[in-house]
Image 1: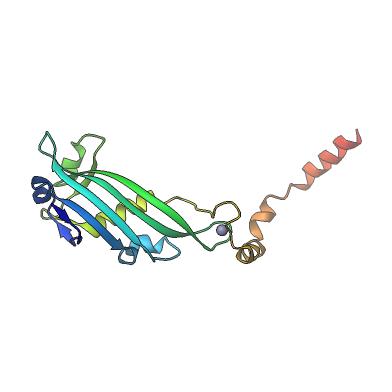
Image 2: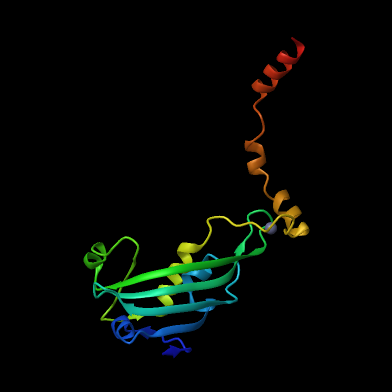
Length: 176
Ligand SMILES: [Zn+2]
């Protein structure tokens, strides 16, 4: 059973019992928390989830979330594309206590009134997958932006200047 229009909410117990597959895309613009961390919210997240009930009667979904997001490059400060790919192995639980009792290889997702908001779940997974810092590939930086970024950013340069005493020590060492 393949569902190619993604629902806003879903009931993991029902989906697991019927072994539903959810597949489709969500626009990144509907993820406010993720968008705040990005240089642009253009693009989509591709979601694939296979639901099943495991041998211990747990409600499980395995699959993946893929998205190309635009993150500010820390060298030139322009948008740089970063490919995110999250492999999912989710166990749906009733509350935090229940979450503590599931095997470590499952990622717990807490249901609210027996349901899960799909966009919230996808957004949290993408946020966790974001790199802490991002750069363009080798020579992929915008040269104009790079010049601007380095000329407005004098403070860190000052910090790495050697202190005058170590220069003196070096001069002395050369004389000897
Ligand atoms: Zn760059």
